[in-house]
Amino acid sequence: GRLAAMRGLRSRWLFVAGLHAVVLLEKAVLEWSPGSVVPALPESGSGIDAALRPSTVSMPALACVTGGLPLLLLGATDHSLEISAAAVATSFGMSEIATVVLKAAVGRPRPNALALLRKGGHRALEARRSFPSGHSSAAMAGCAVATLKLLQRPKNPAWRPLALLPFACACAVGASRIMDRWHHPSDVAAGLAIGMLAAWLSLRVHGAPLANQPKPLAPGLSLQ
Image (tube, rainbow, N blue to C red; front, top):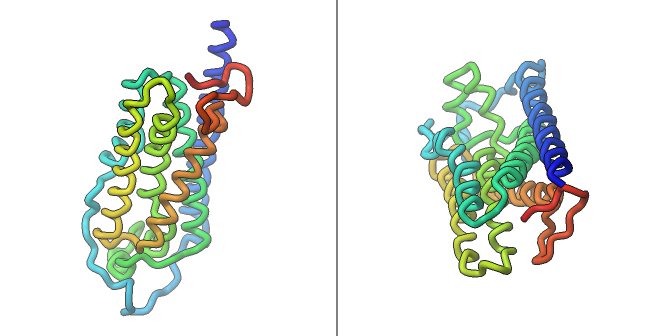
């Protein structure tokens, strides 16, 4: 009944809150740990001496692509906005956890690593956090939720071509990171793959298997 639905929704958001708390803790530990000191890089080198350019896709624009666009499309196609928002938030949290861990573990220099080191401070810490692309993983994490859900709507097949829009937007974000020389192509490819996997897992968590007939994982956790 209605009470069960409310409890299910509360459980979703408690899970989302816990997931994002892990993201914040993870970032704080990596930022302030002794290991956050950037190892020395050569004064010149192939692939890391690009000029420092502003990002074509700003953080507010990224937020619109990651959350705003998917929720706008899902809301317009009769999906439950509350559950869709939980799925997008879960996908983003999962992708962030994987992205932050990999950035710290791999330590790959960015194409503009030398310019970042010359800036010093927080910029210097970013010099070796190229793999994978955080912009790409975040954009695809949100957009892929919309793409996958729109592709599996048997009642409204006319909406299916629209499913390509969020996917294309996420890919465009990734392409901008290469053109701005913040990432190597393989960084972007990995980020997009992480975002797609996170979206798939999120839809499974929230009871929306990738099939025409939904099979909820638990009572009160089915998507419409």
